[in-house]
Amino acid sequence: MPSNNPVLRRAPFSTVQPGEMTEPMTLNGVILRTFFLFVLVVASAATTWTFLLNRPEALSGTILIGAIGGLGCALFTTFKPRTAPISGSIYCLFEGAVIGGITLYAEARYPGVAFQAVCLTFAVLFALLGLYSFRIIRVSQTFQSLIVSATIGIALVYGLNMLFSIFHMPLGFVSGSGTFGILFSLFVVIIAALNLILDFQFIEQGIENRAPKWAEWYAGFSLMVTLIWLYLEILRLLMKLARRR
Image (cartoon, rainbow, N blue to C red; front, side):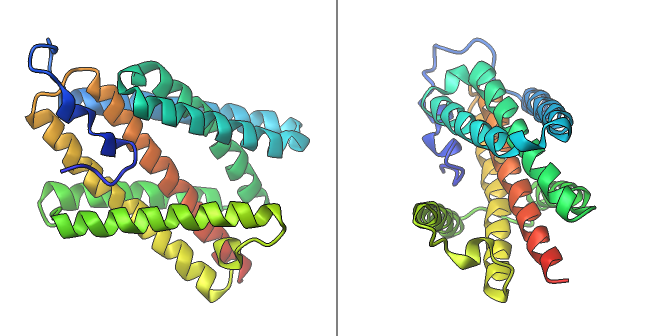
């Protein structure tokens, strides 16, 4: 069953030829690769934060460069999953810059919001991991289809918002702090979180099918894509709520 995560939906694990692997993918391997990529994100975010404290005028440019670079690396890794050890690492460095810039901006306007976003992101991650591990949540075809459809819908909304913003007509609820705007952000957070469930299941299948060792890097990369998305959406929601106080 393919994952809803756009990265994992390419299903590189299912295309493995029996004779091409020497050592199989393991859970410990996935954890180690994911942790390494997480450290890259944190290091990049911290470096960017420090840099922007002294060069606040570079905030917009830093975020833009990080976003474009991250998108390019994500697409390249998606189509060339074997390059994940390198391209996935570069992706995390770019996205760390984005996180560092956005987090600094958010924290300057609403002190304490960044710490709340980090705590909530990890709380969601471990809560869903526990629910999946104990089989409290199971992935069915209907469940998967709903998450896929919702994710595509969110991507379309964000795409339209970017297009309309060029003509100075952004969709108000995407960044607005009104009731509908908050409900929209809450919905996006839920969908981003549910991507983790599908990713957990797909990684489990990769291990069961004895996917090759390089797939550990690809799995770690895909999890970081989801976690970064989840963190940024939680941060956006908290900023909207802070505006209403």
